[in-house]
Image (cartoon, rainbow, N blue to C red; front, side):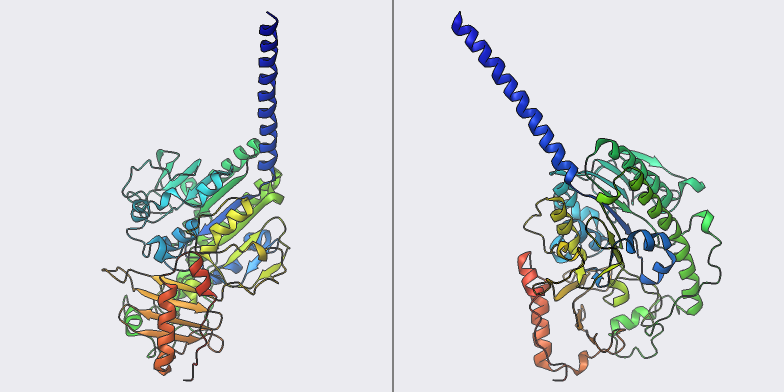
Length: 489
C-alpha cells in the first residue's frame, strides 16, 4: 500500500514537472517571439525613380525615417523573374523563371513554391500575409483556390480569369474566390490597403511576429488611378534625362533598334501623358503607406517593424529612343527605388553598396533568426542597416542581369549581362554585344563593344558565362572577382 502511495505521489510530481516544463517552454517561446521584428514589404509594379517625388507619405514616413538605397537593382527587369528571385534569393537562371510566361506554373512545377521566404519565417513562428499580385499567371496549373505554403493569410488576384488589375477582378481570399466589380470601393489598391489593415489589427492582438507582403498593381499599365485622383496633375511633364530620345542609336544592337521601330514613335507628349497617368495611379499607394504606418503606430508595433518600399523592376519612357517598357538591361529598367525603415536604422541615412533583389530573402531571414537554405545566391545586407557601411571589403562588386530563355523560343529579347560598379557588359541572343563605361557614361549613350579587343571580349565572355551559371556561394565568389580589363586595348 505504501509503495502504491509513493508511486502515486511520484506520478503527481512527474505530471507537475511536465506542466511546469510546458509553462516554462510556453513563456520562453512567447518571449522569443515577442523579441522578433515584424516585416512589411510593399512591392509596386513597374515603379521608376521619376515617380518618387510625387509620393510624399512614402518619402516622409519610410525614406526620411530610415535609409535610402541608392544602388538597388533587380537581376531581371521582367516581373515574374524578379519576384521569384525576391522570395527565393536566387538568380533567374537558378529559379528557371526567366520570363513572365509560363511564370507561376513553372515555379510550381519546379517545386520552388515549397521553399520560399514565407516558409523560412513560418518555421520560426511568423504569421505571413500576402496581398495583391503574386507571380505572373497564378494560379495556372493548380486549383484556383490554391494557396502557396507558408502564408496564413492570402488575398491574391487571379491571372487566368482577370483581364483587369484595378477594377473587375477576382481575388483568391483564403481559398474563397471573391469577385470585385467597377465600383469606386473596388479599386484594387484600396482593397489591398483594407486587407492589410485588417491583418495588422488582427495580428496585433495575437502578439505574433508577422510578415506582411503588399504587392500593388500600380503603376503597371493601364495605370488606372483611383477615381478620386483622376483629375490631378493636369500639367505635369515627364522629366527628360540625357538618354530620352537619344539622337544617335546606331551603336545600339540591331535587336534593340528594331524594338524602337515597333508601335510607332513614342514622342514627348506620349511620355507626358503616360507619366501623368502613372503619377495618378500611385497616389492611392502613397495613401496606403500612410495608413499602414498609422495602424502600426496605433498598435504599438511601429518601432519593431521593418517597412520596405520598392519595385519589381524599373520602366523606360522614351529613353534610348525606345517605346515605354522594361525587360532590357538598361539602367532605367534594372535600377529601382528602395526605401527601408526599422529598428536600428538611422533616419535620413543612405546605403550606397550594390544591393540586388536576390538579397531580400536572406536579409529577412537573418533579421528573423531564420535559416536560409544553402541554395540561396544572394547575401544579407543587415550589416549596412546601422548606417556605418564600414564592412564592404567582401561585398558584391558585380551582379548578373538576365532575361529570356536562350535554348528555346523566347517571347522577349533574350540576353545575359553583368553590371559592375564601373561598367556593364551584355550579350544578346543573336550574339550582338553592349559595353558601357558607366563611370564616364552613366546614361549609356556610347556602346563601346565594337572598340574592345579580342582578349578583353574573351575575358568578359568567360566571366559572364561563369556568373550566369553559378550557384549559391559560387555566385558570391564570382561577383567579387571582377576581371581587370583594358577598355582601350
